[in-house]
Length: 456
Ligand code: SAH
Image (spheres, rainbow, N blue to C red):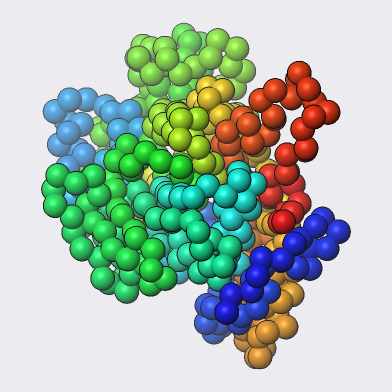
């Protein structure tokens, strides 16, 4: 029987839901190693020497043919080809996430991470007046672990959610990863959908919730939705710009004429359409990265939340419009030269949260970025750790719990460089008519994570 949702106040966070149950994930023996064997992709600059790599060279051949035929391409075009080219792209072909892959992410490190995010959605659902239905929409779900942990929370809180019609929509371009997600979430019982449907695959979760797979956020049906993007925006293609004596120039990728089969960065001889569109006149940095695709997706999320209601939670490493050169590659948990063996390594750049905020265009309110360790602390991670430690019978499990807590929370690991950022309807933060009659309204509940969790 799921525990009733207890009343939690700031003064008594000891009553967090999920206070029962042993740790789900089996202890790894030995506990998850620290870098480099299973390293998280920490903020730019972290990590060791870049590794050169092999691969069968199919993507490099494809790219050099293209470059020979039509000249240098933007870094965004290079990144798009290397990551999501339908034949040989890194995500489409190789997958990459997880301990046996090239990089490890918070949900893969600890079940507690996804559980606290599940609580965040329940807390927002309650604060928004318990709407009768919602879609949980995850962008770039990787192996599906985060959604699985969230669905377990929903299952444990069935008594709270019983009147609510919940469905899950996964936005995933990689056929390889969508197969892994289907095994993880449905036990392999997902079916391809007919071509004309907006979902390319559907199934029922092990906890009985319908799940749909889409290639694009625009294919997700309209409706009240909670969106989630964990380490998604960092994988989208960026443009890179360099300030020169002659003004801003775009960084491009070309063939190195000196070394056969090698690529190199060059500067555009003149301004490009992207330099015109993306560099602000007041820019003070000498090197700037812009991710227009992230901007378009945030615009869509903000429009959808404004129209149909809901919220979006974005978690990623990033900065608030201050960093410069953050483009980097990962292979086998080590830094990897971004131009070497494309298609065999993950390519990524820090998320510019100031750009995401700007692209919401005031259609929603925004909160954050707030550091991961503050967000998780506000969500009650310390208490959850204590409960799991008390319920775990053996030393290996306890060591694993403490190790994963340290990975998520330590400022020198993932605690400081990962951030949480949210889009919320304006009325969630300010009463629409507050200005007129402030005293007539009860205060709005604070947003969990950005403030301490309060569940009623
Ligand atoms: N959220 C997961 C995985 C992060 S890796 C985790 O934290 O573990 C990035 C994910 O985004 C992968 O699932 C990748 O296939 C997906 N992805 C990358 N580019 C995409 C795009 N343009 N559209 C949809 N999904 C994309």
